[in-house]
Image (cartoon, rainbow, N blue to C red):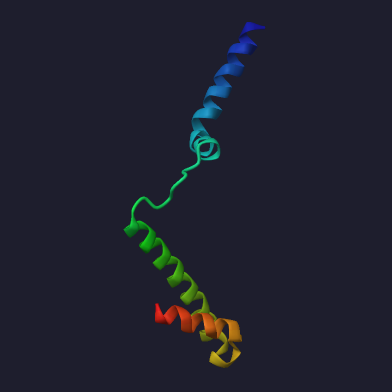
Length: 81
C-alpha cells in the first residue's frame, strides 16, 4: 500500500512540474499586462495594425466596393490615428 502512495506522490509531482506554467496562469493571473504608458501605446498600436490588416486583406480579396459601410468607416477612423 505504501508503494502505491509513493508512486501517486511521484506522479502528482511530475504532473505539477510539467503543468506549472498553466497552474501559475490559472491561479495567479497577471493583473496588469502593460506596465508602462509605452507598453500600452505599443499594445494599442499592434491591435490597430491587426485590424487595418484584416480590413485591407478583405479589400484586396474582394475590392473596395465589397467593403461594408462599417468597414469603410472603421478603416477611415484607423487611418486618421
